[in-house]
Image (cartoon, rainbow, N blue to C red; front, top):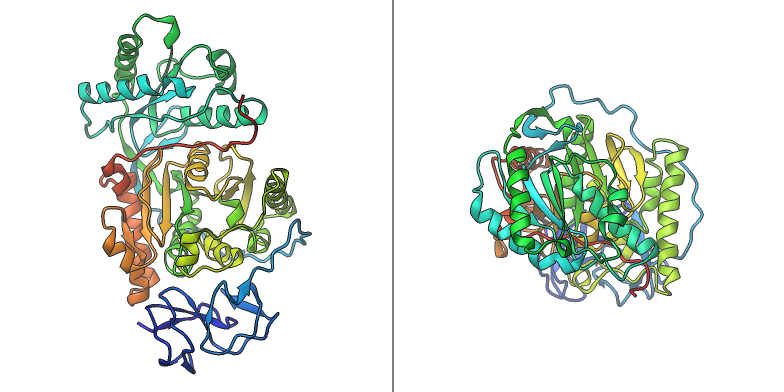
Amino acid sequence: MNKLLKVNNRDNVAVATRDLKQGEVIEELDEQIKLLSDIPMGHKVALANIDSGENVFRYGNPIGRAVKDINQGDWVHTHNLTTNLSDIVEYDYQPNFRTDTAKIENIPTFQGYLRSDGQTGIRNEIWLIPTVFCANGPTQKLAEMANQKFARSENFDGFYALTHPYGCSQQGEDLVYTQNILANLVNHPNAAGVLLLSLGCEKNCFDNFLPILGDYDPNRVKTLIMQDVEDEIAEGLKLIDEIWQYTSQQKRQELPLSKLTIAVNCGGSDAFSGITANALVGRISDFITGCGGSIVMTEVPEMFGAEHLLMNRAENREVFQMIVDMINDYKKYFQRYGQPIYENPVPGNLAGGITTLEEKSLGCIQKGGEAIVRDVLPYGGRVRKDGFTLISGPGNDLVGITTQEAAGCVLTIFTTGRGTPSGFAAPLIRLASNSKMANRKQGWIDYNAGVLLEGKSFEAAAAELLDLIIRVASGAARTKSEANGYRQIGMLRDGVTN
């Protein structure tokens, strides 16, 4: 494995694949480079002299500008590189996408659940969802008791309490966000049945929430107002018995990969994320969309600095304008609260070698491969087209992934360079960007994309990852977060609390 990794011929920096020492002479990339300082693993080395004010390139795009003269062999990081990003930007539509991509003919299959509403799930679970945080305790207790009564089986994957700290003392758009996300989770295809629990006096009571939910199958979805009954546990268990009888009738069947709706997301990124894990996921995104399936990507603040590449992959001018609006609306969200738009990367990203938001974003969007952007959804929206979709949401893993799941994603492919154990409402396959972290946190990582730095081809790695996806989707394998029992959801807050 080379000591330095250069992504694009235009780049004037390369990434260290291991810790390097000052004075070391590296003869790679058609250069002889003497290191002028220690370079930590994942951090950048100048391949040429870069004058103050000159752009620094990675991924073939500017990742910021030098704030002082940088010499060949220098460490390039926050002490000598800063962002070029500004506030609201004017954009031009300059279409730049492949139109010759052939559709996949021999589409692989998986064993999934075809629901009566036409959606496809990969788990047959019963979800217990409180409308308000006051109902969290009984919701958790009911899930625990139900799991003791009804064993998991080949066609039943257990009871799960999707608790949260919301549902009361909210108003306006803030409450609507919570209601839309919860309503979409009720309709999630991995939930064969749902028990909704209300306290009874909350802002998000059934009188206010059920109109947001709309029509539902009373065999699949049951409701309980805890203040209206003497013993909410006993009443809840009665309803759970009824839901289980309905759910237990669902069976897996062979379905084409085109039926899958998958989220792609990342967290705890490092300088290798965009080179290995995200780039590998990009291959999978292209394959899934080529099969006629759906890929959903969010993390809008981590598109800043790379949004022009997504805009130029918009299917048409209408979709282009939707991306522009999504980007600028999110910037206005920061401004509305008086917060800096570009206070990113976070400390863990910086420690992992990412210096500017442009660099982080250029690596982040690799997860979308080369697919044409066919649709853009607001926060709380539902997937409505096959192919590659963007949805408005934050870089925050909890809120962003919940947004994607609420949009209809039954599985998330998640990449990380620093490591994170989080689990969410749907199964999550976690990829490591480097072997050092993957070997240290084997209880968190499902696939080590660091092997791409060690000689494994993208074709071989993509085949392995696709096989894992099919096995997880078919119920033949459980992800590490599933095995650990990690489940959580979160919603975007945008307003005052009463």
